[in-house]
Structures are given as C-alpha cells and as structure tokens.
Image (cartoon, rainbow, N blue to C red; front, side):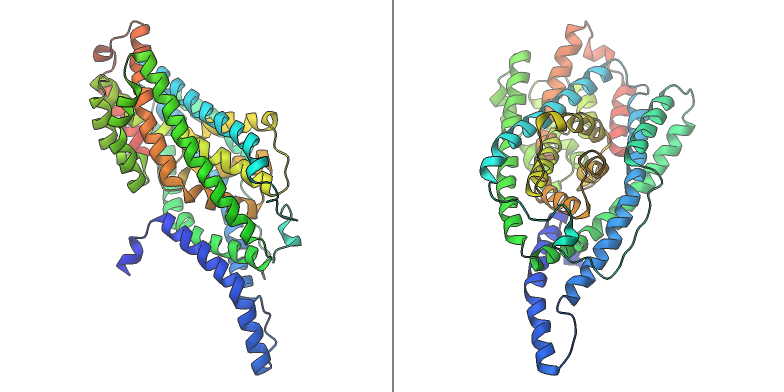
Length: 427
C-alpha cells in the first residue's frame, strides 16, 4: 500500500481516465454476455451508473464547497498581503498581476485564433446538456451552496480590504484558521476523490461514444499549452533582461534548475529554496530575492493563467459554445485576482477557478470535470512556468524600486522578508 501513496496526483488522473475508458468500453458487453448466459436482466450500464452516481454526489458537494474555498483563500490572501509588507509590496503585486493577466490574454488570443483550425470538427453533440447523451446515474442529489459565487467574491473583497484597516489581527487570524480548515478539505477530501469522479465522467462519455474526440482534443490542447508556457517565459525574460541590462538567455539558463525542480515537486512553495538560490545567481539584489520570490510563489501564476484560460476556451469550443475575446476579457481579469489566493496544493489553481467558470462561463458538472482533467494533466509544467517567471518579477521589482529612488538594501526590512515568507507558507 505504501507505493500507492507515492503515486502523484497526475498519475492518479491518468489512471482514472484509462480506467474510465476501459469501464465504459467493456462492462456493457460483459454484463450483456452474462445476461444472455444466465438469463439475467441486469442493466448493461450498471457499473457505469454506479460511478456516475458517485460523480453526481461529488459534484454537488464540490459546488457547495466553492464559495467556502473562495472565502477561505481570498480573504486572508488580501488581508495578509496588505499588512506591513513595506514599500516594495505595491511594485511586486502590480508586476505579478500584470504578468499573469498578460499571460492570460496571450493564451486567450492564441486559443481563439488556433482552436477553430486545430479543433475543427471536434465539437461534442448535446454535451451542453449531458443528460441528452450521457447517463444520469441512479441518484439525484442537490446541495445548495451557502451563497452564489459572485456573492462570495464580493464578500471576500470586502472582508479582505476591511481587515487591512483594522489595528488588531484577530479577524485575520480567524480567517487564516478558516483557510487551514479549507486547505484540509481540499487536501484530504476533494483532491483525493477527484480521480474517482473523473473515472465516472470518462466511463460515462465512453459509453456515450464521445471519448475518442475528447482524448484527441486533450493531446492538441496539451501541446499548445506547453508551447505557450515556453513562449511566455521567453517574453518575460526578454522584457526583464532588456529593462535591467541583463542577458535574458543567461538569466533563463540560470533558472532552469528551479524549472525542473518545480516539475518534480508540482509545488511553487516547495521549490522556493531552489528558486531563491537560482535568482540570486542572476545578479538580483539578495534582499529583493528574499522578499519577492516567496511572495511571487503565491501571487505570480502566469503558467496557471495560461492553462486555465486555454482549457476553458477548449471546453467551450468542444461543447458548441461561441467564445469571443470581448466576452472572455472579464473572466481573465477576475481570474488574475483569484490566482493570488490559489491554495498551494496540486490542482489548487483550477479548484479556485471553478466557481468563476460556473458563474461567468456557465460550466456544468461534466464541463468542470473535463476542465479539471485538462488542467491537472499539465499542472507540473504550469507550476514550473510560474516558478521560473518569478525571477523576472524580482528583477523588475529591483529596477522599479531604484526608479522610485528606493534602496532595496534599506527599504526592504527583515520584517518585510519574514512577512513574504509567512505568506508563502500560509498558502
């Protein structure tokens, strides 16, 4: 049993997709053969229906949890970042948000231009209402969330900004504890059960004869996302190198150990020691690195923005939607803010974004399952892009501070560095 614990989440997702295809393709014929041999009248889709029933309950619980996840991460994220982090905070946060949003718009532009070509003929019939083509399972289960997604977002911003005006840390500590509870819910319940949920969805889609198209789309989207990750890193380092007078290719080469470490750990936080060491070797001031890198591990998620945006447009395109640049601009802008609060667990970015996809893009349960599977299939590469790009934010923070007449060695205090490290640990 110990070796099972060593299998990463990506491994479980791939196993669940394979098992889902196997169950959906083989069990109807197997049960039909048994019915003929023994005179039974067992429904041929019995096993698929059992997994679909689990997915129905899990999806309802996931929808119930989304507002809790939003409140649990955004409130302490905003409240914590704005307290006592010194003069460099605004520069670092502004650059991180700008970088993440620009990466999202790059992905959106490429998706809208390329998907009509590379995904031509891949739309799935009746997928916008899965009950038309897919089995609905044996159970009808609903669990109403405590509030809507947009209500949770607005409340989170009000509370987060309000906490920054308080002189005491009581409210902040309360929501940090609540965040710990939600992190436990994600790490111990939702994330471990995701593979079973995805197994049920893929078994159902195989039974409906749609899985071949979906897997072909997976491959094409995966390749495009990885290429966009690399293009984004080249753009980030070209800009940072040009503005700071450094060789961008030499900087990028120096950061490669952090890139490959992040692929292995699938965690920005776990990669911080390597990222800090590499960033210092690029010549960025040590105090800037010590402050900006831990902070960016939480708030700079350009790779995740690319992945979520690309996958969301792919799912919309597959399900017969008509995505346009104008209609998706608000989604990218809000997603950039939500990524600041994304939890530091594998798949945390997409789990934070689910509520946004439901409220702004109208994603249903099956579309969310596809989105999760697409995202997790390349989460390691997205994390590696996030981590590697953090050095460019640190370099530009140093440049921006000097342009404003600040001295990093004096204007970044030990308290500021400790705060940045604490924020990364909290997430």
